[in-house]
Amino acid sequence: MSEMSIAISEKLKSEVKNLNFYYGAVQALKNISLPIERRKVTALIGPSGCGKTTFLRCFNRMHDLYPGNRYEGEIILYPDNINIISTEIDPIEIRMQISMVFQKPNPFPKSIYENVAYGLRVRGINNKQILNERVEKSLRGAALWEEVKDRLHDLAFELSGGQQQRLCIARALATDPRILLFDEPTSALDPTATSKIEELIIELKNEVTIIIVTHNMQQAARVSDSTAFMYLGEIIEFDRTEKIFTAPTKKLTEEYITGRFG
Amino acid sequence: MRKKIRLKEFFIEAVLFLSAASSIFITLSIVIILFYESYGFFKKIPIIEFLTGTQWTPLFAEPRFGVLPLVTGTLLTTSIALSVALPLGLIAAIYLSEYAPHKVRETVKPVLELLAAVPTVVYGYFALLFLTPILQKFIPDLSGFNALSPGIIMGIMIIPYVSSVSEDAMRAVPMHIKEGSYAMGATRLQTAFKVIIPAAFSGIAAAFIIGISRAIGETMVVAIAAGMMPNFTFNPLEPVQTFTSYIVMVSLGDVPHGTLEYKTIFAAGIALFFMTLFFNILGFFLRAKIRERY
Image (cartoon, rainbow over all chains, first blue to last red; front, top):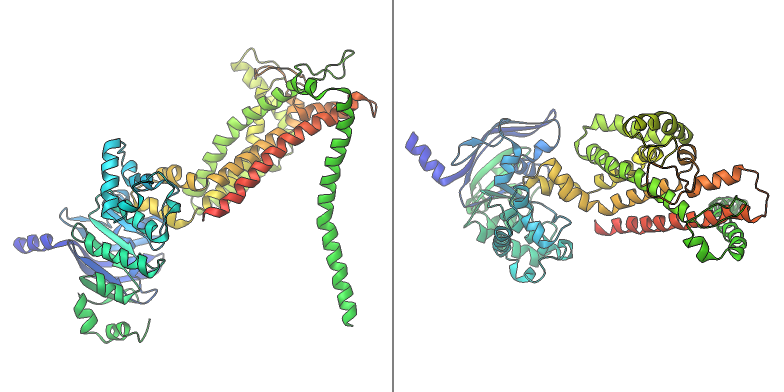
């Protein structure tokens, strides 16, 4: 048993066990269990309102920002074996380790440099040399360094939409997260910017575990290693991505990926 | 039949237009009268003397027409008021927009706005008869009439203006920007100071400018509690006179119409007009800018 759990924890970054989530009296997620593999991309797909974003936002406890929300079950983070959604765990501790990139690029009203440095500054890191190094590393990691290195102190709003989204990725990378969450990161972007972000995601999985929510099935097929299909707050099917898209076992999954609903 | 409807429409439109135009017309006539009457004043008193003189004694046997004592009096009470209203108003706004639970906000906000409904004359007597005696216990040098006490009271009076507009600006910061900050592991306080205030900056600046205009234009509190003494000083413990309280004093006195003393009202009025106009225009541009960003 212990050998097996070691094997699992080496392969897994996180594991969701019987997760239920409630917005007040409404149950939005029903009995979800899912392994999250280390340094792999896990995609969550499904029609609008199926709970995929709600599920993603459990990983960094975003639901704690609003009153009346309640979690049940476990999301275990390896190798520490802590339960992310336990009420004894401070959500800020979790958000320091699990970063998020949002649907709409949301840079802060600050310079490009300060946007990337933000997560470090809120942790009390103000050493100029450390900040310079981390900012450059993160911007390189987000494939943005070459475009902005000469104007790091310009306002972030002056960047294009795609650049802003890569800036948000750099901001998320700067704190060296253990899991990177993407919530439909390309839905507000044009096709060129979208393919840049997708290339970036594929590259980033060498460094960090990624979970991505997308409504774009081609995107899930292109970037992810495994895919969970969700419907009405439940996981209908979870498997290797190529399996889900070529030979799904559930009828509902097949209907969704062939575009018959959703 | 159709003609009748069209006539009715025309009539309604004309009434609406006239109502809208009347406010512009009234404002314009105020400006014209201000300029006209103060022109009569400046024909006799050189504008340089008016702007640089340090004695303001238009009603004395040997009148002096230096407006600077009124300027310092106004600036003194205004800056005392602002040093109370801006920090407290901003803190109240941060609390209401970012910390207060829904229920608390729904109760506190109207109560705070009630502060603005108290007649200013009440605030004036509150400053004179309540706050000044208390302050005198701590500051024995404080004279019965002074700039400090009405300044503080004016500040309290202005808090709801500052907090209400700043809170609206902070709440207008899009949720996904705030969430971006929380998602980086920031606390509420860090999010408020590092993200929300910079994002709402132009709205907050507009709130500050409304507060400044309010403080400069406030009359009753300073007329009652500041002492009506044109005093070229920046010492808050001494009695002072502001533009507004001077105008009240002369308007209520028995100065004959058309005399030079009478015209000083308009000279002071126009100086005050330009001061508040400047701040209002500044506020207008800042508020216009707020819409550009998001």
